[in-house]
Image 1 (tube, protein in one colour):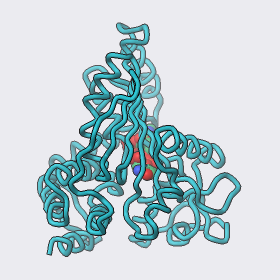
Image 2 (spheres, helix red, strand yellow):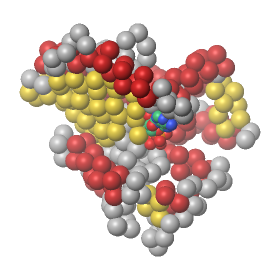
Image 3 (cartoon, helix red, strand yellow):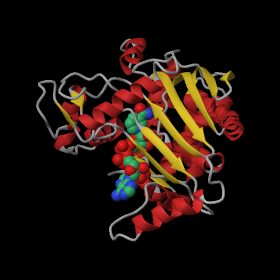
Length: 335
Ligand code: NDP
């Protein structure tokens, strides 16, 4: 692949300039650029600079508020709502972190509903940040209808990821973050872009037949991971990130976009628990480590998040490579 090498600083500067040039103010552009570069740094390309043209399209169309000022509201002792003011999610997430940590420590458990925001991306940054504070955390979000319900042929659920973080003594927390679909949408789009095939479990074409052609899956419907079990989790995530917090289902988000093809508007539910308040303040960390040690004793295992953290160390030294076609596209957005 013809590619361009960038340091993380250069990549951030490119994203920042592009967002500023296309209608975001400094706070919104910086938060979104930081989030994209965190994804690039961890080799999660489908949430990195690949998304920048999509973001720019959202602001240029006037649909996304590039000067959003998210607001925080305490709805109940353990429930917070953050209204993203129609901007991109990263600034709202930045604003929400402190109040959620404070509330979880005070209450033992706290939930935060993000509403009125565009494109909640990968979930690991939120849960990792909470686990770095010593909290145990969950995150859920929906998007656009891409995944068929079990037995169905038409997309209804988002690829609806779930993130989970657990603190570890003196090290990076254990974090997993996964779609409830067999493949993340962005990975299928990248396979289509790069002319690669996808596994048969990824989805079905408009005719309902399985296929390995990513273009046909994109035109048809994705499938949940593990058959109906992934689909039930996708349904749960729809309910938690939509009706529970007063934001869109994936189908409603698509209707709201009205064919403009911009990033999805929707919500995210975060739940943070302070393990120190659950009865084993002195022992929970060591107890959790016993489980991780037992996993790692077995050949062939690793902890979720390990690949990302290893990638982070590599990209800090060596920078990143992005496809030249993407670089050219971004440069054009700066013209
Ligand atoms: P993956 O299937 O690549 O990975 C899922 C999780 O499993 C990761 O935490 C990963 O850790 C871990 N893992 C992978 N292999 C192993 C292994 N052998 N042993 C132990 N753990 C392992 O993720 P997805 O493709 O499902 O999702 C990719 C990203 O896309 C996520 O960040 C998700 O939030 C995002 N997404 C966002 C959506 C949205 O609408 N906003 C929709 C769908 C997905 P590691 O990272 O270290 O490999």
